[in-house]
Length: 328
Image (cartoon, rainbow, N blue to C red; front, side):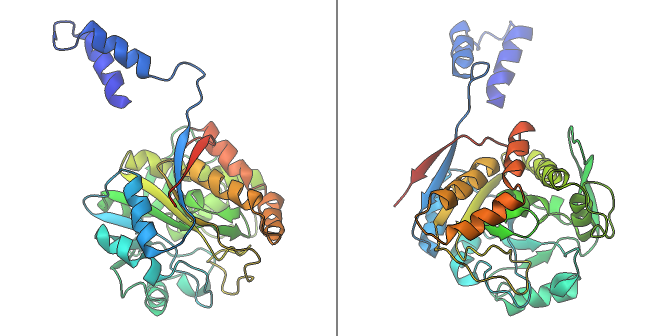
């Protein structure tokens, strides 16, 4: 789409460029969405969760991860066990010659400093399949938040700008604060430095200890969406999103003692749109015939989790309108 606008601008201001015809200009105008037209994202899905299908769904997106590739996932809090298993993700990570990237936590626990975090990654088997980079080991850098209501800057690990391409590889599940954790949570709080995590949790009030003075819930959710938008803006078309909806606990992988899942697995989903991907995951939870879904739905709704998607759509992070394309 950007190239179409560039072509039209060149036609308007440089008419001597005879290589651009009136018919080409008209064709470009016809291909642009009309004002008010709803854009629909594509979300791909495999019901069967396997290493092979994880690679296939990446290929279905049609966007090749090139250069130095960051694979953002959660290495999991020590004591937890619901995180994406190295054996599942290994073929995909190695196919793209990826580096597993993380940042230290803001809540203490077993991944609050780089040494402990690397030990947790090793204990959970991640260092055996790929390099692991704790991106804020040497500090942080600020990404601008364009038009942010709560955040003007998003503080991410200092190593993050060294990467050419990002794969947001998320474990979709519940979350104690956000209602659910998916692509948007993984690319916002996940890529944020330890101090940056506090910044998002406090809706831009502090980079130290946010827990004693938390903002209104919607302000926190909106801050996650704003931080995610800064990452998307930084990456342009050098980012894609894959979520594995398994081990569907109401608790996230940052919990050392997560509640056991009470509903069955859903599958692997992927998109070039993080809002559409998270929306599809939440919709599939609601549409499931598994009676255990009520627990995860309660967690999502009690935290007003859908507002993250509503606000994300509002600020241009993505769309909640999608076409679900099943691949098995």
